[in-house]
Length: 463
Image 1 (cartoon, helix red, strand yellow):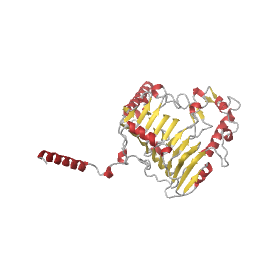
Image 2 (cartoon, rainbow, N blue to C red):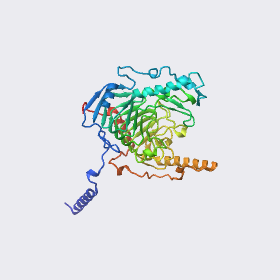
Image 3 (cartoon, rainbow, N blue to C red):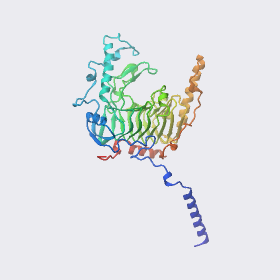
């Protein structure tokens, strides 16, 4: 062997030794998101592990299984209908409130703006019937998941249709492999004072979490099914009668939740994190939620919409269009549509999300006076996008408008106008839990499309 060959060999050996010395140990490298184990804030959820398995095929069986004590796993087979009675009858509007009429109810808003019992002879009756019917429907369709429960969809047709699934103070809960079709609220109410032009307020969610903790929601599909709001009757101000509330709302101090590999399809007001601007006493220090590997497809807004929470959003795929089953009309086009919604005291840490839209990148984020937000290397239509710049611009525009208004009226501006926009959200996911995001836009898109939803989950028949 020549001297030059020996020198080159020694150089390569030295370089390899240095590289091995500098490389982190294998256990220090965080894992890729595993479809079978939660990553993020909800990583410690074990659900009903160790408890008995209940197999259910009807609403009554599901209700009874949920009421059973102790840790448990519930296997859902086939479609369970929220509006189905114990003897198999499917209930409708007239079963809940005989004599209720949406057209008559709408006619009692004078000019579409002010309710009047005197507008017509039937107005008082319609007001009472609407409330009675709403309460009756809620008692029928709401099913609450207790602590230490795993709810699994078994088979390609495992569905909850018209069920208002809820968690109320429950903890250590897993929900996987289910399609949840949002309930139709037969008794949604019109509020002419909600917003600039009024708004419909439906009561029932597909899944609502209130004061729940340590929860993993995985490989589910959330949808309005065949009952899109665009097909609903038209009410005041030309607005369709919105008969759906959120698909997955997390409220009232709920905490330590992961939502992964799920599909949210063709819906308007998708997901809230936080109860309201005035609920900081309940929500500060909580609402810690991780979203990854999810598909948001034709979802107009709130994916998610965050108040107060420390929320991690990574490797999700968003797609929508100004046309289609659920048109998305961005702020720039005069509509409410947005992907990420930033609200009061929110601390959203976003990274490596893939956004697609056939309009402006303005849609990627909406800002309701949130001065803290971080995004790293997300993409819009396959190319890098500065999501922080969009959030900052909207914050600065709102701040300037409020300061100008205060100056013109001689009043004090809101307290938030004294804040400066920053990318320091006060926390970093890597300091809390192990994860490693995918860093290629096409890979994120391909992974989400392959893994999100119940069809990608292969669950055992038992266990």
